[in-house]
Amino acid sequence: GMFFAELGAEVIKIENKSTGGDLTRKWKLPVEQKESTTSSYYHSVNWNKEILFLDLKEAVDHAVAIEKISAADLLITNFKSGDAEKFGMSSSVLLSRYPSLIIAEITGFDDQERVAYDAVLQAETGFMSLNGNPGDQPMKMPVALIDLLAAHQLKEGILIALLQRAKTGKGCKVTASLYRSAIASLANQASAYLNTHVVPLASG
Image (cartoon, rainbow, N blue to C red; front, side, top):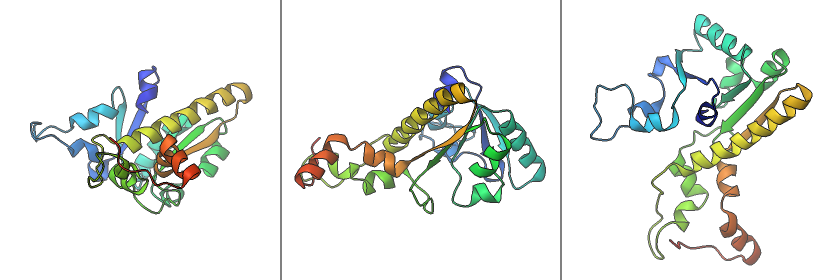
């Protein structure tokens, strides 16, 4: 969403008011003021977005969300498994109502059953075993790299969808998962394994 905000788009982010909003609001450094409602981490990915606090379980809030979607060019979602259907916001339902809408869905794992965290993805897709010096224990990278990789993959899909809609007038659904984005980004290390069957080791 912030990529498009930086390009000048009007971006509206819906945060769950019943849970206090985005979790990263509370991910503060020790030097950040406890009474502040946001963290520097939060600001790193939410610049220039309009924030709406809604609870989709409430009829009035749900109606507000649908009104925003009906007027939107693009909807980016990261629902947990089953939630889109529960709220009547599955891609099939929305595209039947708003055929020019582009729906961009980001998930953690392909089965959508598991909640995904960047550190877990770094571990399960091999990034931790590649990071650090030979002989070291697996090491996490200090930025949410898999989140960023998946965001770029999804952005590319959105841009292609926008080009397609400019020609056809039709929207569509594009997807990216953190897991697939991480695997795709292993690049030469994955190629080395696939071509030589040698498991890459920590190398920097």
